[in-house]
Length: 210
Length: 285
Image (cartoon, rainbow over all chains, first blue to last red; front, side, top):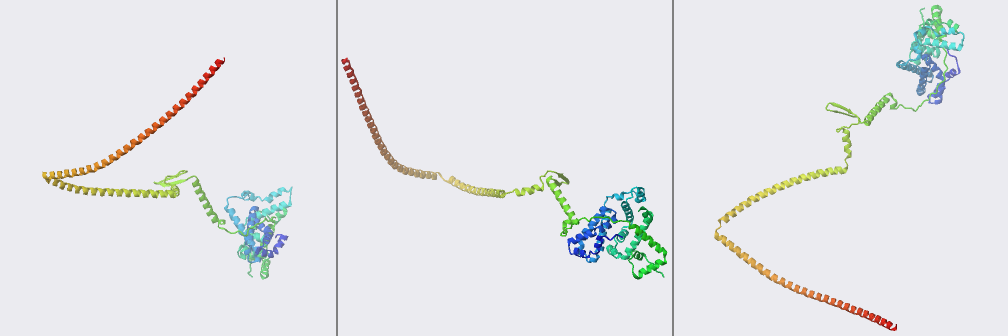
């Protein structure tokens, strides 16, 4: 779960802000963007594991939010509504990438590189055990595991595990039933478990690493 | 008891979103089924490992929106395509215009040329049309009118000629017949008749000449009389003029002699006086 920071607290009390934004207040809209940008960006980043695409998708999501916020019916549903926009934006970007012929450098890694996880190489770099760097490395490694999930499972896992949405909110955001969300979550976690086992990532190895 | 929680229930339990009877049921089931607990533990471990993914820090870029923006036709992709097609067509037409592109299909042959305009090009016809001024139009009208007049006149003279000819022909036929009758009459006439005719003719002529002569002689006499009178007057006038001239001459001669006489006298007196003076001088000496 993510830590409760100041912006996160503000998110909880943003109903009046959403109401003002809904009435066409540009300032309130700008504040909403400031409040939610980190969350939506991180959702997009975990979805793509690519900074540029995450920036692209999140900016498009917020542009769409500002354009359509006045048509929002229920202020209390703002969160799930915003995630709906983010999900659609990410899906659209993913489709574009699929259609475009250019390849990201991230996708041009050889198959051998996958079998030798980066954190294993880090063991040989004990001379300079910079904790933050290792944390980042672990984070990247786990994100690669996340990328192995199907898009549907990934969406649910990110929203539940990292964005802290309730199953009801995820169901609203994805416009599917709550049970479907839960079942996707279950299979998502199950798949992740297998991936972690395959990559030999356990609590112990992480503890050793840290 | 046959209760077995499905994945959905397990998930809800795992994330603490179960309440009341369902939660109790799941907890009771877990107590009885350690394998389910192990499964749940495994999932919890996955959760805790995956929590190692940290959030990325990011600064929200400014998002500037123009809410007044409307969706015009040319903002849609269809509109853009249409405008693109129109623009390229215009370009092609302009290029054709400036390079003088000429395409013609004649006698099953396709001719494409640049900077060439055939005699049968429609552009030429189009340009020649507005060059006509009103005066030129007037000229054309006049020309056609005069041509029409000429043809009318020609027709008219032709018909006139025909008419004349027919008249002459008629007349000729008529006079011929008259002449023929006259000739017959003449040939029919006797010598006596001819003599009589000549005699009457002579008598007529003599009478006419006599009348003419008498009329003529009286006129002539009057005329000669007038002529004589005029001539006499002329002679008289001439004499008078001669006399006057003579008189004038005489007068001038007279004057001249007078002047000469006077001059000689003067000369004589001067000579005499000089002679006298010399004579007296000589005597003094």
